[in-house]
Image 1 (cartoon, rainbow, N blue to C red):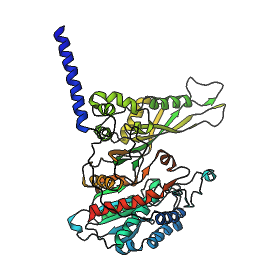
Image 2 (cartoon, rainbow, N blue to C red):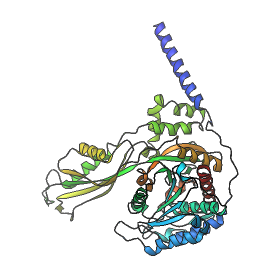
Image 3 (cartoon, rainbow, N blue to C red):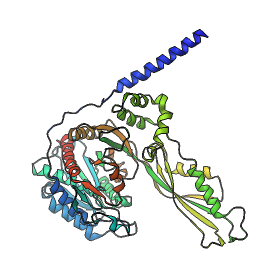
Image 4 (tube, rainbow, N blue to C red):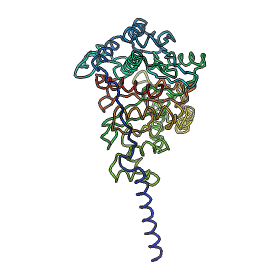
Length: 487
């Protein structure tokens, strides 16, 4: 018995030592510092005025059936050419898919290095009818108020378009000539899936034999006050994005008068089908990418929390239990299930012969569209319910977190924003990046804006706005990134 206790005690001591050593390998504030070079200080007020003018052009994507507003999209193309003459003097511009814009900035030694692409989109979502009066500033005013530019598209995604063009115009005006080709790829229907915009652009580039080293799109940014336990801005550089699929559940039952119902009706059959998938969510998993994310954050945490984060082989169940309490973090760990529409029946005393539910899944990169459908069929396990795919797209491939593009984004973020935390991430929403997987070695998603919790509610919501200091910082960031990667 004594020997057994000695063995157990020795094992516990060894376990503690292993955990402490692993924690020490990461250490507090362990992320590599980057020397901050001088960078251009942009006139934020001037950028704000130009963004405000762009917001006033109502490039709204209403629906797949609606025809784009040719005047608005033609207007923003004309506006960009007039607002940024130096950039337009050195770039080749083409209109693709009727409304999307492709800019090519030819490199002086283009054959020596693959080109890079900056992706953004010109369209915006509609403002929900009846909510217009809830805005502090009118949604398409482009008003400058309280240190911000207000209006639909300020954050998603005209602010990025304008910051990119500001950087290009400044560089061109200084006589900068990139060594490699640089593309600006501005789609017009990202909010509808991007098939006619980004999809057409990709086909256009394919036809010309263009293969990109990497692309950079929206999708994440510098999160401040969003990541629990971290006060500094966290630069979340997305290396992949979730896919999505919408499933249609159709339940069929015996119709007739409600006074003589069968044991089951179409509605009760459908209700159980929806519960079958919602009561059995996909399990949360700490895969290699999540571990890399948590390890990146661990260096900024107190020792006790760092001890937990750096020993996930032991503490994984505890960490998963903590993460599942927040919808945002939980969503990054698994495929999500969300019933969004349910309908059936015409009158209170008539038994419907069928009822329909729409369930939307956001697919983690380890799952597939077909696998999601198959799992739903297995969980429902009822021949009276058909499960159909009503539209879907696969998750994107993972891009390298050690490749040229990722490292350049990380180093530029440190150089411009100083004392921040860097971490790889997964974009939960869809972006135009997914269209470029076939013609780019890597695709990254990162907008150099500092986002607060309130900003997340304003994207696609009421009172969308972007701080003027964000616009100035983003323009400097894009300039520094182009200098770093194309000099």
